[in-house]
Image (cartoon, rainbow, N blue to C red; front, side, top):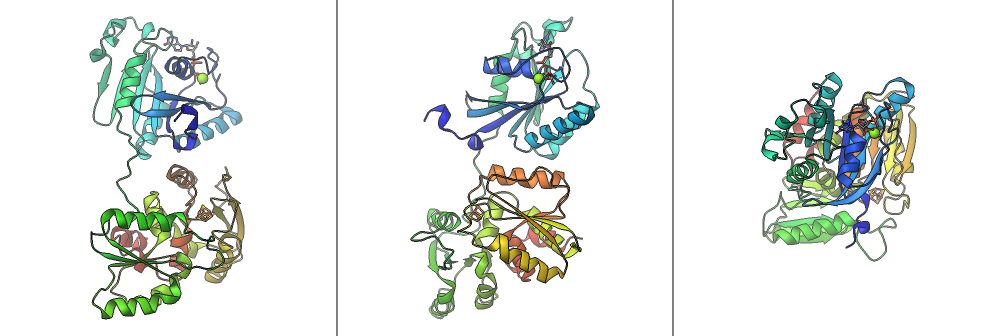
Length: 419
Ligand SMILES: Nc1nc2c(ncn2[C@@H]2O[C@H](COP(=O)(O)OP(=O)(O)OP(=O)(O)O)[C@@H](O)[C@H]2O)c(=O)[nH]1
Ligand code: SF4
Ligand SMILES: [Mg+2]
C-alpha cells in the first residue's frame, strides 16, 4: 500500500505544541526533512495548523501537525488556542516543544496537565540546545544517554532544530512510545465465553439495507465466531418463539443483543434472568464513550424550555438510521421532558465548532465513523462542558431499561446512580 492510500483519519497523529517561538515549526521541518512550515523569529508565525503525512518507523504512516503557539493573546489568539485544543483532541502523541534556555512556565505546565487529563502520551522537547553554554551536557556530543531522560510516563529529549542535533534520537523516542492501535476491547468477544449462545435480534424493516446486514451486526457475528461461541439471529417478530424453543430444550441463551429500535419489545419478551444489551451500547463501549454516554443520558431529565439539543449523525444518507434523528428522537425528547426544546441536527463529517450553546448532544451510534472521530467529538463536548450521549443509550434511558441493558457492565450502574 502506498503512503497516500492511508486516509488521514487512520494515521497516528503526532502533534507539536508549545509557546510561540519555541521552535515547533523548525522542529517539524527537521523531522520531516522538508520546509513545510514557515519559520521566523516573529511571535505567532504559525497561524493555522499545518499537516504533513509521512512514514515514521516503527509506527508506520503518521500525520505530523504543527500548531499555532499555545500562549497566543488577543481575539485572534484565542481562536488559535481553541484550534490547538481541538487538535489535541485528535492527537495520539503530543510533543511539547520548549526552549531549553529557560525553565518550563505555567502555560507549559498547563499543557502538560491537559496531556495527562486526556491521557495522551507525550514527550517534552527542550529545543535550542545549541544556545546553551554547557551544550555538551545536553548531548551535543551526540551521546543519546545524556540527552534523554524519562520516567514511565514521558521522556525529555534535548534537541536543536536548526543545528539538527538529536533529531534522529527524538524520532526513536517517539517510535518507542507504546501507542499501538490494538484495542483490547472487543465488541462482545471479551464478555462472552466459548460455546455460549448469543441471540442477535435484527429487525428487517424498510430502514434495513437491502440484502445485507449493517456493520455492527456483522462485527458482532464475527466476534462471536472468533471466540467460538454460537450466534443465533432472529427478527424481533420471531424472538418469542425462538426463546420458547431454546429455553424448553435446555439451551437458554447467555446473552441477547438487540437493535435499539426494537428495545422496548425485546426487553418485554426476554426473561429477566437473561442478560440483554444492544448493538449501540456495545458499539459505544467499543468506541470508548459508553461511560460518558450513560452519564450524558441522565442530562435529558434536566432539560428546560428553550434549551438547545444537538442531534448528530455520522452519515448523510439517512437510510440506515431512518428518521431517528429528524423525527423520532425529537419526539421522544419532547414527550419525555414536556419541554419546548430547540433541536438542531448535524450530519456526516460536519460537527459544529461551538458546542457551548448546547445543553445536550445526542450522537448516532457512529458506525460509519472511526473510533478516533467519535472520541474526538466526545472530547470536544467534554471540553465545552456539554453532556454527550448516543441513540442507544438515550433510547434505553427514556424507555426505563438502561439499567438492564448496561447490567453486563456492572461499573456503569454506578455511573447511572451517581448524583
Ligand atoms: N538557535 C536556535 N534557534 C532556533 C532553534 N529552533 C528554532 N529556532 C529559532 O527560533 C525562532 C522561532 O522558530 P519557529 O520554528 O518559527 O517557532 P514556532 O514555535 O513555530 O513559533 P510560532 O509559529 O510563532 O508559534 C526562529 O527564529 C528559529 O530560527 C534551535 O534549535 N536553535
Ligand atoms: S454512522 Fe450513524 S447515522 Fe450513519 S448508519 Fe451509522 S449509526 Fe446511523
Ligand atoms: Mg510556527
